[in-house]
Amino acid sequence: MLPCGCCYNCRMLRPRTILFVCVGLAAAAGLIFLLGGLGERGAGNGSGARGSGAPPRHVLLISIDTLRRDRLGAYGYARAVSPAIDALAARGVVFEQAIAQAPWTAPSHASMMTSLYPSVLRIGKYRDPGAISPAAETLAEAMKRNGFRTYAVTENAFLSPEFGFDQGFDVFHMRPDSRSAVASLSAWLGALKPQDRFFAFFHTYDVHEYEPPAEYSERFVRSYDGILKDPERLLRKALETHARFGKAVARFSEEEWRQVLALREAPGARVDAPLAEVAGFVREMNLTVKKILQNHQDYRRLVATFREEDWRYVQDLYDSTIAFVDDQLSALFSFLERRGLMDDTLILFTSDHGEEFGEHGYGGHGYTLFDENLRVPLILVYPSLAPRRVDPQVRILDLVPTILDLLAFEPSPVWQGTSLVPIMGGAPTRLIAISENAHSPLKSVRTPAHKYIASMAAPYQFLFDLAADPTETGNLAAGPPQSVQSEMRLFLLQSVLAHAADATYAAGAHARISPEVLEQKRALGYVSAGDSGGEPDAEASDWVKLLEADLSVGGARRASRPFGSEPEGKGRDGE
Ligand SMILES: [Zn+2]
Image 1: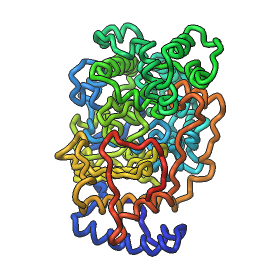
Image 2: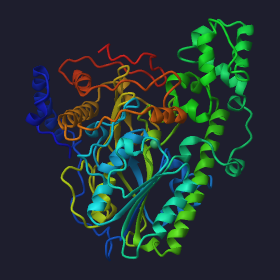
Image 3: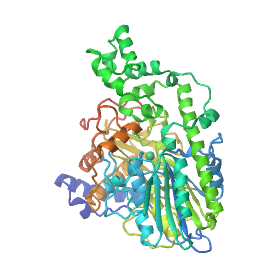
């Protein structure tokens, strides 16, 4: 349960807000009581889910970056892209509704590793994601404290020592792909002594990149001759739809277009105004699928022009990378079997977020909080855990408490997640998932029945009935007022206040990004050419101002916009 003591939260607020929040929280208590309870409930203590026998000797946490749950056979996907993962799932506990706490890598993994929300850790902006504070105990630190040897292998610039992700690891390796990562992990495991217990974290970025080895694209990419395989047409379309250059290039003559397009062959060629600015952009441009999808600010309108055949090509590339990673995991699992480690190792398989393929007009990840971004696979495998499907909603935030519970270690009072062990045993639960995106900025509350999304950008808000509308296409916030909307909005306000009031992890949470890391981010498509970062974060006080407005008596409800009609500006005014 989130801390919600009124006096505690009010210490840092303005007088008007103090009055409102005190009234609001009192009202919330009444609302929640009357409506059957939005307040989250863990499942209590004790469970038969652990099964009999000793706790696991070893723990292996696998995070496949950017992996949608619905692209795995274990979650119903028809294409055979993940036989090794599916075989693993058949032996374990498969969670149907696991929700990430952020839609991009650094904040989501930070929550995964600490059981703290990104806003408590002060992590989540692209420009300055922040580092995990030394004051926060990571999973690796907890394991090390309990006598485990600890190891991590990753490829990602964000999951680096610079951002605090090496805290607690004896060995922290950076490798270029999942194949070399498996080799690195296997070598480390092979050098352990028989008496050693280990915690290993395996993270790969291969699915994120849309660049499968040829043998995999040959198997899974179907015939396609659309714009994504036509560099000249793609470049021209990218400029015509570009947020900054679109208006300028609309006035280009065919001769000017010829000069711009010729820069691809002669990037050093001199061009005069008005082509010069565009030329600089073209020279830096390397239009990969990943860069187009991930560089929302530059290519949002280009992505909006994608046709069905373009999205099919994008997803074929995506599937190919999953098949490649699956083969590497197959090799890793075979190694564990040969070494006799499989039956002694608790394996957790998950992802930090999903990926969008135009469902709501977006591609990539990191910009919205729709379910294609937030629902991730979660599979737990250990011989004493009976294979089963678990339907109740859970959170990536719950991984640390679950792992330490299965190991029979003491829980920490600072965790915001809860152990899933009772839930695996069938205990009733009603966990609420908050997800946050400091970059856009957005926040959401997800119950088993509804999802509410609030955005600072427009501003606008969404409410979805997940049972009747699992693809989140009917925005109930645009219709008549709903009591559940007020309830969820108040719950979100309550969390903002509580997280902002907790400054435990604020100190040391601001790593400045070095030029080298910034360059890596550019290569990954997170930062556009000429841009040093993303949108500024909304401060907690801005969120309080936004969320409290519609809760006040007689407050005007904000107009909700249909999907895809987001205004160009990211202003915080108009409130
Ligand atoms: Zn990621």
